[in-house]
Image 1: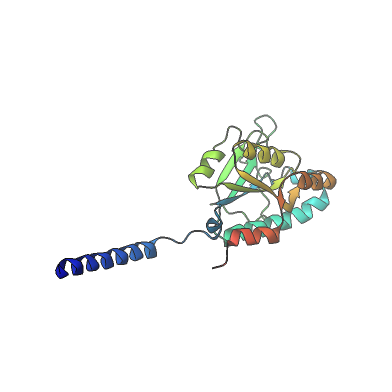
Image 2: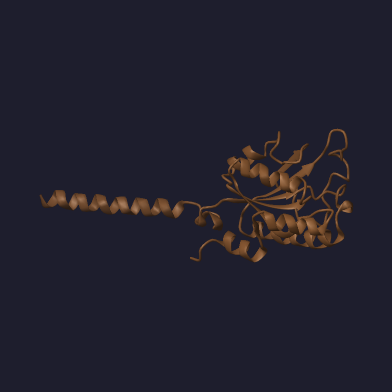
Length: 203
């Protein structure tokens, strides 16, 4: 009887050891995952063809803040997704300089890329599948135009049951007053609040 009890104790000890070892080899989750979210940043239509048409106040602040948000997502290990617009009739053509983001925007060539032909980045693109493949359930939008493609993408994300937020001071449109109105009527988060969200609970 004592031998059986001893054997059970040894087996239990080995089981606990194996479980602990398995937990130790699991990759650490990205910080925000501990808070139950898997975020992605969408940088929308910040292209050379469209920037000159935007309000100068929006453009100057927006481009600066977009880079801050990009670096914040990178620092926390979350995806930065580039979204480009190209109309079959109006352009800009994908192989043109007008199609590209300015070199001052901190996107990288290996950041995932979507090319859209409609206002919403979800309409007839692979964006939804790309996000689901990465497990992303919370989207944060920046770029232009605040009253056009960014707003259309915001509503497109809501229709697909994503949690979606505009990023304060990182939206650009042809009229700064309209940009502010979009920030007021949509769910909007600022840089400092987002930094806390992405970092997750303290350990």
